[in-house]
Image 1 (cartoon, rainbow, N blue to C red):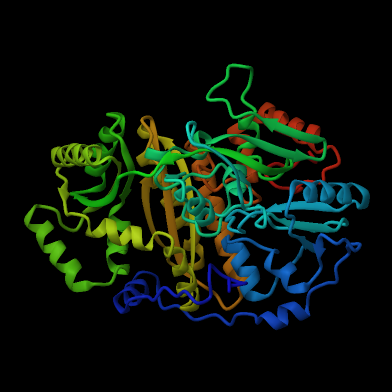
Image 2 (image 1 turned 60 degrees about the vertical axis):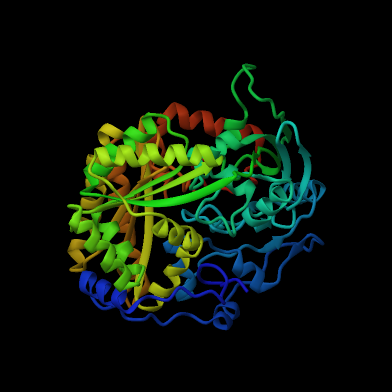
Amino acid sequence: MRRWNGWGDNTVQYPLAANAASFLEKKIGKGVPPKDAQLADVLAGMPHSRLADNPLISKEPEQRLRHARGQSLPDWIALRSGTISTFPDGVAFPESQSDIADLIQFAIQTGARLIPYGGGTSVVGHINPLSSDEPVVTVDMRHMNRMTAFHEKSLLATFNAGVSGPDLEAQLRALGCTLGHYPQSFEYSTLGGWIATHSKGQQALFYGRIEDLFAGGTLLSPAGTLNIPAHPSSAAGPDLRHLVLGSEGRLGFITQAVVRASPLPAKEEFHGLFFPDFSAGQAAVREMVQAGLPLSMLRLSTVEETETTLVLAGHERAIGLVEQYLSVRGISKDKSMLLAGFSGTERLVTTTRKEVQALAKKHGGVHVGKQFGKQWRKSRFRSPYLRNTLWEKGYAVDTLETAVPWHLLDKTLSSIEDAINKAIDPFDERVHLFSHISHLYKSGASVYVTYIFRLLEDSQETLLRWEKMKAAASEAIVAQGATISHQHGIGLDHQPYMTAEKGSLGIDLITDSIRRLDPRGIMNPGKLINTAR
């Protein structure tokens, strides 16, 4: 069964190696396991639903609790401490577009607000109900999970938007195809959620980003139905797909999506390479992507992330042998690890791998084979479970990300890390920071930062420290002219920084679109931008 106050299935554990525990204690101090609130106690303290009865809506307390928060660190703090301020008044599980139309009419008639809900994996507050005088219904889309059409020649597949990553892939693989969209939340997140939050997949270099994969579909809004045809391309004015992409539930419900599938690759593999330092690795991957090599993935870790990854992996003896080999090759303490993915025909994979190895060698890189890549692939959807393990040992984990042109990358990364360290300093605490670049583009790359710090006995003190670090990092991102979000979206947490990126006129354009499709303010109020201004 899925955890109500953490990540994933409660039967899945991610053990922490003994050397990893001592590594963290040395970096930031010994964690003190928190005293988490119990499910029964949280349920006992929930307010009664304010909703009128409706056959599509459940007012059962545990369902309301399980749909009250996502997976951000503030969400975890609220759930684990039992200090949840607001709950949905009910949860709906529509099975058809007709059900959704009925829910919209119910909201219009009763004044209720509707929150579209996919897999509940948001890390920036997309699905959190806000305190208001109106009742709130969370609309869980996951019963709408079937493929409804597939065109073999065009490789166009139409899905109900509530389909989860594994179910989508299973239905396509039965036809010899794949979408190839693998965000870290893949096991639980949904196609509609990917579109609504402008998601990025780990192998987007080969399969494409969600804006490449989303060909068209249906948006059901309070103002009516928006149908977007799945043309290969169109010059008929602005592309309405890009109005829906990143709309975060403010415009209506994405009920169906047409996606561009790919044939299953004949071969797919992931390799590990090491560079003398992060700068050498950057030069190599920049040259690889600007040369247009048909890679599936590139992920380059900083020195700190490389060290942390090797420690968390355990297998001390095997890692030690690799480090001895690298030392002989001139790569030691400042090493930077690259994971490179290759997908396609046998010939394409072989040719691309040889090109990558040659470019890596040019920049002092050493190829160490497929073992690191195999391990990453095995655990890529299990690594979020480490958050549960670390929390239980007294540590909080959060991530943030951005994207920036190559010429600003180093300065942006150092500014973010400096800002986080300075924000925690007044509390006489330490934070362990480590980063990587991925989702590479010819003009730049995304920067992904993970930071770990100790939990406090007082959950509100933990939240305060997170707020200080998050704000400092966000201000550093904006100051460098980087995007406030490359793949996590806006939700609530990034909303204060939207104007810096879009400008006042841009915000007005988005606001006008929201008000045109949702004139009564029914849909996911308060997220993305504040339309009350």
